[in-house]
Length: 100
Image 1: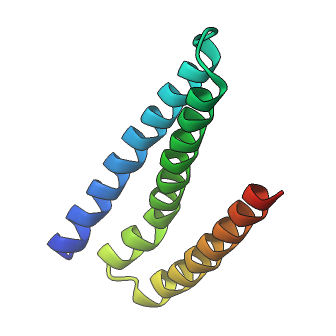
Image 2: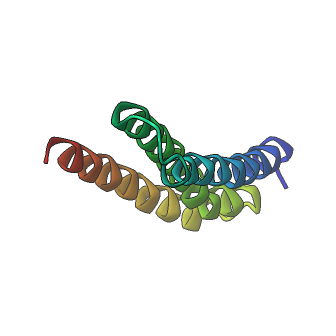
């Protein structure tokens, strides 16, 4: 087992979990802050969206990292290609939503 990849996998898992939590706090603030301005709420939503997307990307990278850590290079490459396609799709969808 590759020690560096193992640590990267654990770090990615840890970051994904905490970023999901931080995104949730930002979304909760938007709902709970009745007297906040629209600008403040929009800023919190944007920040929550950013943390959510980063945590999604980290979380979905897990299978590839685990497979590489276990030495399953070919299957890891397939997972990495699928993750890359997912990341491109997610970024394109995000741009469409921001424009629309």
